Image (cartoon, rainbow, N blue to C red):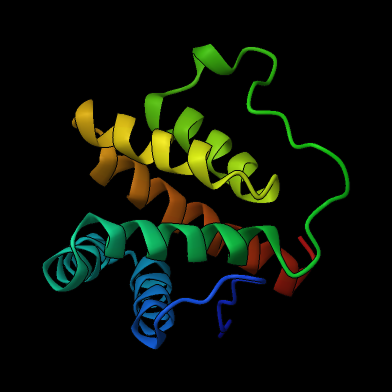
Length: 139
């Protein structure tokens, strides 16, 4: 499985796409250290914005080239029963699908302030890979 991430209507530096591919490759192999290391390198290179851009790119890859029409809800039945990282990913993906950058940035900042960003980014990487596998294998 090899997917090239794209972010429609957003200009991102080429290294963001390279980092997103590296993260997906690490996630496929179950290499948590590889995922974290790539995000850390992005932060070293471009600050928190670098990690955010990769997360937005992963969200774009997860949603696909044709975001669903209409508004994607940020709240779902029983979402508060889910783990922090799962709630965060659902809301971050919804923010992307709605082209709602301010909400995506707010979610990113909240996860960072709550000390949960690393786990949220791991879950986002895993969700992206799982979605791509499902698409590829029709499962």
